Image 1 (tube, rainbow, N blue to C red):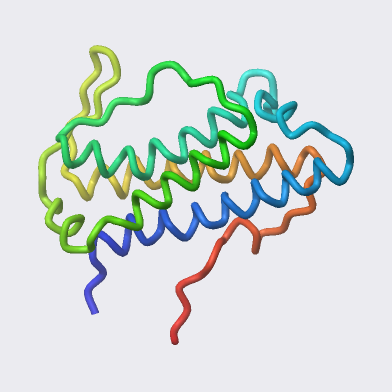
Image 2 (cartoon, rainbow, N blue to C red):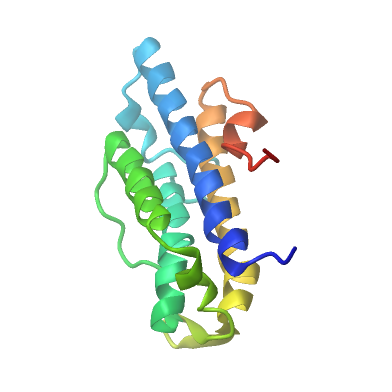
Length: 173
């Protein structure tokens, strides 16, 4: 059986976004139970020179739905300024991203294979094919930011395990 671009990208995004949504929900419940304002965590960082939870969650959206949109347009650029969001706003970003990705048809995504596209940041331009960009740039960034969001919550006492991060696995039926 051949694996399609949709299966490698969108199906993987959806699985991990489900995990991120669950991790954020468990975080919210933990903070409320312990009389901690969840909004206090939005700007929390693992270390001083890393970007905060808000950036990690926004980057999960940018490197999933944003990556697919970039491939469709032929160019992907990192998001500019970050919007002001509270904890619920971060949860909404994940929900909205999942909803939009779930609406993509496999044929629509698979038709992008072989397309030329460019990663552009300021004056720097890096050429890719659609699948090269998604597999070697988008997915690694997506997983990095999802794991970092998990790590920030875990470091702040949220009782999480690897299974929480994984989301709903695509098991044989």
